[in-house]
Structure formats: C-alpha cells, structure tokens
Length: 336
Ligand code: AMP
Ligand code: TRP
Image 1 (cartoon, helix red, strand yellow):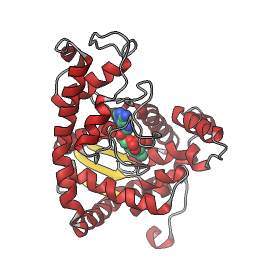
Image 2 (cartoon, rainbow, N blue to C red):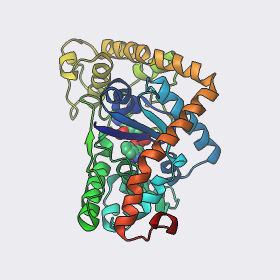
Image 3 (tube, rainbow, N blue to C red):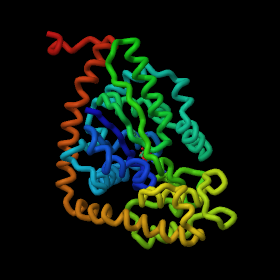
C-alpha cells in the first residue's frame, strides 16, 4: 500500500494557504487512498526566533486543526514530531550524507537567512540543516508520496537525492519518495501582496486568512484584497496576479478551474463577494469542529499519544537499519 507523509510547522496560526495547498487534500483524498502520517513538525519551529510557550500552544492548535479538518485518527497517524526520537536520530545520519553546498542552495534558506540578517539578527544553524531534518521525517517512514504546496518542491527533491545517495553508498535502505501537489491552489498568494506566498508569519495579517478567522474578518480581508489594473476578470498569473489568486481560491473552494470561472465574472467586486462567501462556507465546519475539540483536550491528547506510539513503531526499524548500514556498531544486547 502506498504510504504518505506530510507535516505542518507550528510557527504561526494555520492559513488558508496551508488548508488549500495541503491539509484539505490530506483529509479529503490522501487518508482514504493510502497509509498516511500527518505530523505537527515542532522541531522545525525552532529554526527561527521562537517563544517556547507559543510553540507549545501552536502545536496543540495545529494538531486540533488537523483533526477539525477531517483527518481521522482511525485512518491516519497524527502525531507531534518531537514525540518520536527517530526523526532527530536519522537527521544526524543524513547530515553525514548531505553537503553544505547543497544546503546553501536551498531557496527557503536563502530567503529566510537574508531576511534574518537584514533585521540585524543571527541565523540559527538549524535553519541551514532544516531540509535534512525534513528528509529524515519522510525517509524514516519509507513514505512513497509527500503531498505539499509548491514551496516545498526543492526540499522534496533534496530528500530524493539524499535517499538515492545513501542507498548507493550503504546499500538499499530508503524508499525514494515523490512530491504531490494539488491541481489548483498549490501556491496561495498574500491578498495584500500577490507577489508573495500567503505565509503564516506575514506582517500585519491583512493579506492572510487564518483558518480560525471569524467570518466577518474573512469577508473584510477578501473584499480588501489588492486587485490589478483594468477591470476584466482574467486568469493570468503574470499580468493579473491579484485577480488570478482570487480565481484560484474560488476554484479550489468550489471545485472548478480558475480559467473556467474567469468567464463567469464581469467585475472584480462580484468575484470578491463570491470568493468571500465560498471561503466562509468552506471554513464553517472546520471552525465548528475545532470548537468542539477544544472543549475536549483529553481526546486530542490521546490521539497524539497513540499517534506517536504508532509512528515510533513504524519508523524504528528503518532508522535502525540505516544505523547499521552506515557503519555504527549495534548495541551489545541487540548484537547477540
Ligand atoms: P508550513 O506552514 O510551511 O509548515 O506548510 C505546511 C504545508 O502547507 C506545506 O505543504 C506547504 O507547502 C503548504 N503551504 C503553506 N503555505 C502555502 C500557500 N500559501 N499556498 C499553498 N500551500 C501552502
Ligand atoms: N518544510 C515543510 C514546510 O515548511 C514542513 C515539513 C517538515 C514537511 N517536514 C516535512 C512537509 C515532511 C512534508 C514532509 O511546509
């Protein structure tokens, strides 16, 4: 059976980009067709300036939102990355396979480290090695597919390279995974700055829709979205990035294609109104379910406990195999 692994980092509140680009696909499609693992990858949240209490709160919230989005713990394994030691164990081995040049070429590293330096801050070493930990997340489980938004393409490519290199040097150990993307909305853009991705940590948040935004806040943000010059509703990501982004969001909510929808609208205003309604309706059941789950923290904790247990069982044999293959002496009790 196909195995799927994906994750979301608790660096901020989950956004519409996370939902349309990744989480909805996990809930609606992936968990039904494959053996799936979805993780709140909290170790990744420590690669940038962080507040410990906030990371804990966001981790719990992200896990709750995965369940509220319809991920069913009877079908999929939902867990917190730091509860399973195998990720960090394998990450070190893969650091011995990856090169520093490879790390420095990662677009996300270049962008985030430049931003950090421009702010006068320092760059954590873990920001550089982050893609290796991500590779460990995926390879520890022998995942075949990694459903992600398109900002993660390069990281999944690197994961493939590391798997192939390890297998060539030390014998076949890892499955070589591939990334999968949603057809529409693989990159949802910021409503105030359609040249940038809608990210969790955007500045004021006016261009970012959070999954837990109240309906009137969602409406306001969409109605105030930056549009393009002219007045024709056309799907053209280069010439009309703002309108194209709204068309993608609407198409993703309603299941059509952005090109097809562009012919339906005569004005920017009408497109915004329908997009706002569609997003509000799509988020309503997720928000309702989230409210129910928040009232039952013991249930969420139990899901995470069982998830971690299962994840440990699934990853341990592969990581142990990698330890042996790379030349580490087995502990005495196991060697007998
Ligand atoms: P992150 O928030 O970076 O942990 O991302 C979790 C998942 O959501 C990854 O698969 C990302 O590719 C996806 N994602 C994040 N932001 C967006 C966006 N603006 N559009 C589409 N997918 C996104
Ligand atoms: N790097 C991913 C992101 O920023 C999150 C992530 C960490 C991930 N480990 C993963 C995604 C493993 C897929 C598989 O979105």
